[in-house]
Length: 465
Image (tube, rainbow, N blue to C red; front, side, top):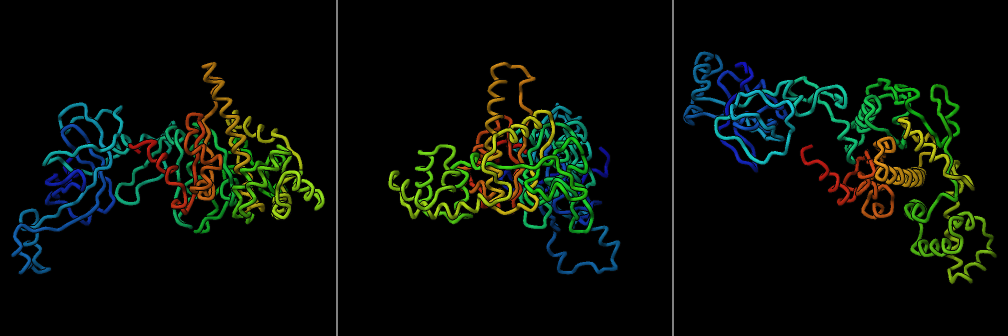
């Protein structure tokens, strides 16, 4: 270790607070920044830490009553490190095991970072984090490791992400409007496509991922279709999208009335302004008409509704109100009277072949559209993935194993709020579908609206990250 790397030594601290390090006499606080990454070299571990505070101190408080003037350069230099000094507060974030007790020993390149469970002793060395330290913690760019950028402050060193581990759990990208959530999500998706660590099913609700968009600083940012060509397919709900220059889609997607289940409609309770009797009325319709309940309801005349309501012991007025509100669903341009599961099954077949699929909403971008389509498509995808995983468990043939799938979803609070998380397939995926190699990446500006149990499950996925 060269002298300039050394910043100071640890003089104080507590596990539940921060560590205090006294800076070397030649180290200026102006060369350090809050949030910079530093290393504390303990006897057995390296502690990957961040600077949380900078403080100026003196050994004799009386010195401050008659401080040296601005021109007294010699006096100030003579006092530095003896009567005046600086300390930094550092917060250990991760620790890495050393191969020996030698504090300057070479660190085991195979050692994995782990949560901090102890603190170093007095006089442990504090130094800048080097490129090698970053590689130990974040991995070296290449293979499954994808460089996401550099720290906001301090060293201009790449921070890589282990994409295989990312695919193993559900993740959230949260931030206020205009903070770059979609840009960060697009970067993560680019890494997954480029490094071939899994496949993506992306619900492009606001035209953010499929095609190029202009950033806030007026720079054109290419979409996934522009960047990766045939490795990405775009299925659009909008007929117009397929005819726009430079935005070629691969297929037009339709939803059949026969594919819409009761839970899909109840998920839209607020959007459709359904009353309290809607759930009971739908249950009676399902009992009598099974999968054709919605088509039968929408096709009923007033007289037929009256007759059926009497026989089913239902309210004819509630039935008529439900019919009027569900006309909103029937009138959506992508909804057709009858459709089979072949389109969704074809999407899963594409994912099996390693082709990433973007479901592009285009002009069909109402909240009703988002919630209805995403729930129906993901439910069928989940069914097929469960079947594939069960086949793989029986055969133990790696060729039968489904590719790790990440489903990207914006406005996640609408699907994962405390009420909806129990109804939607996304709640099931967020809680338990890791074992079937299906995870979520949610992009949202209101994480407080997501069910706390769901968020806790994500937090427990990897305490080291």
